[in-house]
Length: 262
Image 1: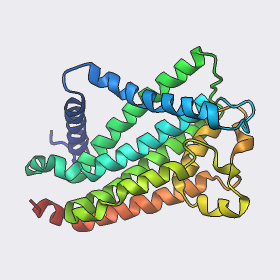
Image 2 (image 1 turned 90 degrees about the vertical axis):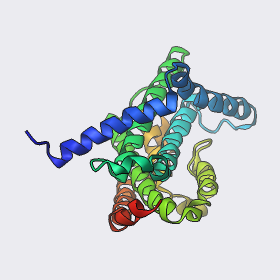
Image 3 (image 1 turned 45 degrees about the horizontal axis):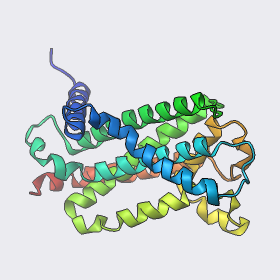
Image 4 (image 1 turned 120 degrees about the horizontal axis):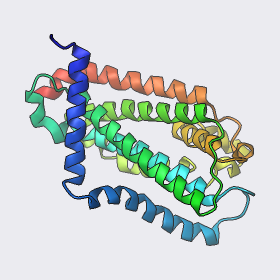
């Protein structure tokens, strides 16, 4: 019985997923351990620094739990975007096989990053709970919704950047600077409610901030009172739809040109 187009695409994405996993980690288990060690080192440095220089304005909130819900969420976003952007150039030889399309490589890489980030997030939350930190799922529906929207938003943006990178490589040069700027404007290290009220409006244009704050509100008891009032799941959804439409439209119109490039 002939397979449908969707079944063929799912099979292609599955094969690409395992290929990406093998390429990323090889045959050695230490490769998987590094997926945990990398964010652990990052958060350890931040904890050491901010334990001494931060103020105590978030009474009753664990800074370690606060930090995990910022670093890992931002890492998921940045890894999906970066890996999607380079998906074509890294897999160009595979496009000689008709069932495999550039968008499949983006989806496979995004799925791998989601699996890895979910595992790392659960590991650290269980570890922090065992160490006596307070971690409770306050709102599971919002947690899942915000995470899913963040992943889709990252895929939409990554898909658009993949097209730009394949056709105009110099056009993606500013991305590292933009990501570093977003790192500080998305509340990863400190809550942005402390920004003077007259400037908060401009900060909340950043949909990544909404995703991080919604995830924190859903998993940190008592954090609700520290969330900026303009944080909205609806706004995150609107930005996700716009970026996904932009990415798909750009991919649809330039797919043939991408495949013709050497």
